[in-house]
Length: 117
Image (cartoon, rainbow, N blue to C red):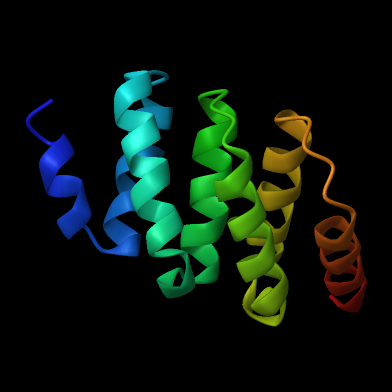
């Protein structure tokens, strides 16, 4: 709980790394996840492809569904899709599928980019 007020000071990378770490540990407090999602949403434009992919992967691994964050990740991913590695493409597609969030434009962008590789 002590970290919650400090989350607003985190950079996009810090937020992505924090939620990724909790996902690797296979657990996080829902209040913490809600706060990370809110802060990540505010900083989503700062995210690099790896951070977008890690955010999506971590949220899916933790089974934490946040539609506004997923929409923002999808929008940023589509805008930056040319900079995604194959691993980023795969992790992002997996995350959306795992959460059962069908975002057709994102999947089309991922598919088109993957076919270029």
